[in-house]
Structure formats: C-alpha cells, structure tokens
Length: 306
Ligand code: GYE
Image 1 (tube, protein in one colour):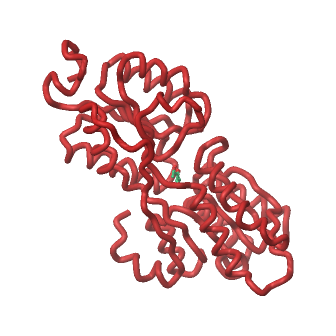
Image 2: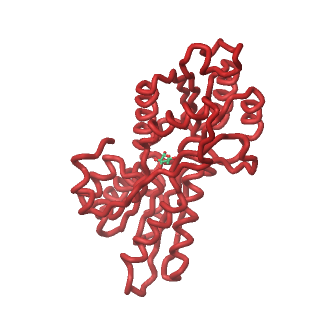
Image 3: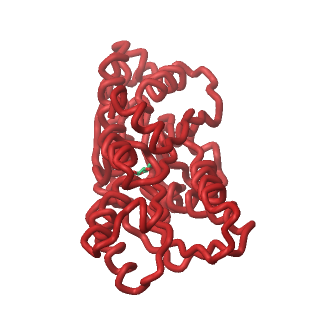
C-alpha cells in the first residue's frame, strides 16, 4: 500500500494497512513485552508493520517518523521517548495527511490536532497508587520516613507523572521525605549503579520508590551487595508488574507493585483501522490496570503472560 496514492487513502489501494511504528527502545521487560504485543497484534490484524527502534533517542524517532512520511505509510504510531519537541515533525505528518496515534506515552504539545488519539496508562494515577500504599503501610508511625527515588528517563511522561502523582499523595504527611531522587533510565544496570551511590551517600534509607521493575531489580542487587535485605531493611515499591518483578515481589524482595500493562497491541491495531477508515475515535484510551501485594503476586504469577 505504501506506493499507492491515487485514492489518497492508503488503505484503499490494496486493502492492506501499513503502519510505521517507532518504539522507544528495548530498555526494560515492559518494553520487550510491549514490542511483542504490537508485532503479534499487527500480524493478527493483517496490518503491515514497519518497526523502528529508537534506542531511547528522540532524534532517532524524528528520523523514523520522517522516513515513514516519505514512505507514505497509512498510519504512524509511536511511543515518544520524551514529552517535548514533537510539533515540527508531527506537523509534517499532518500535512502529508498521515494520521498519528500516540502509544504508551503522551506528548506535551497543546496542539492536539497533531494526533488522533493517545492510547496508554494514566501514569499520574500509578504514582498516586504507589504513594497511597506507602501512606497506609506507615500509618500510625511518627518517625521520619526516608525515601529514595529511581526515576525513569528524564523528560519522559512516565518519569514526570509517576514522580508527580507519588509526590502529591505523600506530601499530605510531612514524615515522608524524599532524600534523594535520580534517573536510573528505566534500566537494571543504571538502577543498580544509582542505588549503589544512594546507599553510599545515605545510611538511613527506609524506602525505595522505583519508576519501573527493572530499576528496582537492579537496586535489589546493590542492596544485597551492601549487606542489606531488600523488602525488609528497605521497603521497595515499583511500577510495571513484569514477570521478574512479580517474582521478586512473591519472594519478598519487593513490597508492592503498581501494574502498568504493556499489552497495547490489539487496541492499537483496532484504533489504527478506524483512524485509517476515517472514523472518529476517542481522544484518549486509558489502559485498565491493578496493583499487587506479595500475596497477590504469588497467586497471579502462574498466569502471568509476560
Ligand atoms: O514503565 C518502563 C518502560 O513507558 C510505561 O517505559 C512505559 C515505561 C515502563 O521502560 O518499564
């Protein structure tokens, strides 16, 4: 369909929809599960997928989107590495008449005509759920609670929103203090490295809040290497609920996980078909998700898909 054109609607030339998809990278278990979901759903929907991995760099995503425009794909979907700086390239797609779907992460542009819909989680809500669990877990205690935070990639929607949602909830009680906060780039390696530095700088860490499981898992290695017991000496809260995270939760090394579903493929393909057919779609499609305690993780693990 990429070289059709007479109809101006790519779907009409050979009936097959071509989607250009620019993925963030392969930084986490969540991301790998998300990529698998998108690939599988495209195949099942009979959509031809042009997949491009940005390796966590915005410039690579901009290049990929430009190349999708040049190839005249029918629809572009992408998960923006950071929130800012998309107007120019998205305007190019719009001028070429190619609809764009934001997947997983949002952008901060006030011009909502640059995309048709945004499919993904409510990251502020996820941060709030993390904070609410913490508030309950430390209810009735009056001593200061020292929290360290491993943030996702600087400038990304999940890092900004998970930080803000959490902060909003814990600020209700002044005993909660975020004593250190730094990016661990959503990876295990960086999570370990930064946690190691946190442990060297602070002897009195009570809680770790990591914006994803992978950073939490890396941090667990650093905590164990420092001779402390993760989940016992340091309370650990993470986000995602991928299999390795759920296993650590069931093993007692993590205390609470806020779920963020990576299985966006089927909904994305549905939206793509509608958008290409010129149907109106809701401006926002929010993913449904839950939270897990250690007991709930034990029960859920056998059926966990990713
Ligand atoms: O939580 C993290 C990944 O954008 C929701 O990106 C996604 C986040 C996810 O690297 O593990």
